[in-house]
Amino acid sequence: MIYVLTAIHVIVCIFLIIVVLLQSGKSADLAGAFGGTGSQSTFGPRGAASALSRATTGAVIIFMLTSLTLSIMSARNTSGVGGTSVFQGTPSKPATPATTPQQGAPAQPATPPPTSK
Image (cartoon, rainbow, N blue to C red; front, top):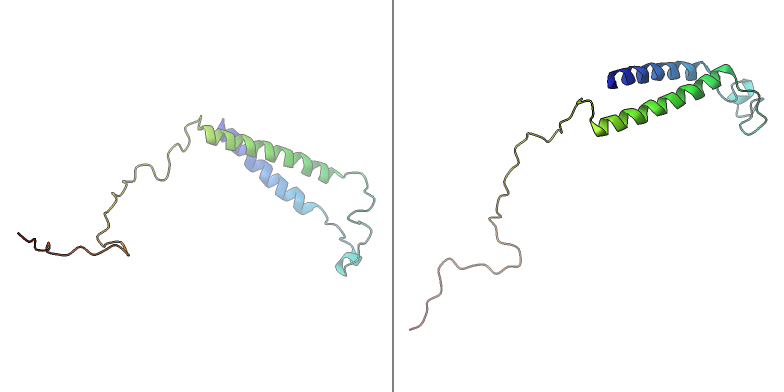
């Protein structure tokens, strides 16, 4: 199941790249090259959606659904793909005690002080 979903996801990605590259950008006319808004104004009147924009919308919806489904399936790990952590199987290092005294702590004398009898 995950392999089929991954194949659909890759096909939709390639289709989405092609459809987006085929569309003309906003202000693609001569006035847009010099900073003018041109006939395709950003907030101006909008014409009917073209076939490419509807195809882009459909591809984006499928892309998002396959992305969410793949991430949920990966988190649940129902298919057994992956399944191990990068850190699994590596030996842990034992904690080494500090050999130097802490700063500010009084130094211990090497020989005990003499006691009076």
